[in-house]
Image (cartoon, rainbow, N blue to C red):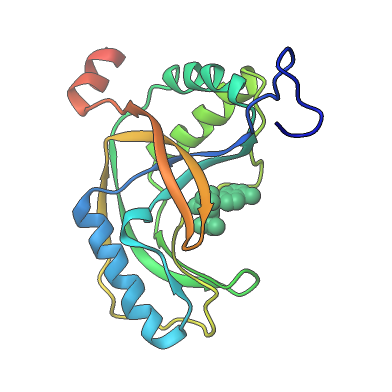
Length: 195
Ligand code: 2AM
């Protein structure tokens, strides 16, 4: 038993690193992973694994496990329509050496989804990253040179649900586990809800 712990007063479970995200279908994941591989040839760096390609919506950071039910209720209160995104811009951030894919234009339902989640979390008393939202899929980390992304095809992605993800660091980088999922409304459903 670790020093300081006792049977009558067990140590509280460890905080978990969590974030809300969109997870791509197989085709979109493959297209983005392929783009990452092409870009890697020119700019080096570490390629995001196919299984971990994702779009972060809201980053929560370390969350105490007892807050998770509240977090889930907040997520369930967010109602947004399904939408599609076309990741057709490739570029990098020099300061953190990330090579990314972005949509040329952010779809309004994506922006509303992020704002809806942030508001629901705030009302539930759960803090999250407050920096302005920049939708991006990280394709490479520790890139050595600026990418030349011209001529690469875009990747279309149909978002039908959002997920809550736990991130655990392992020897290969971050391993992600989906611990909750919520559907976005299909068009017919959105129309009948708004009429
Ligand atoms: P990144 O790919 O740009 O690093 C899991 O770490 C996910 O959360 C990644 O998509 C990562 O974005 C994002 N993330 C990590 N730390 C973050 C932070 N402090 N603020 C916002 N997003 C963060």
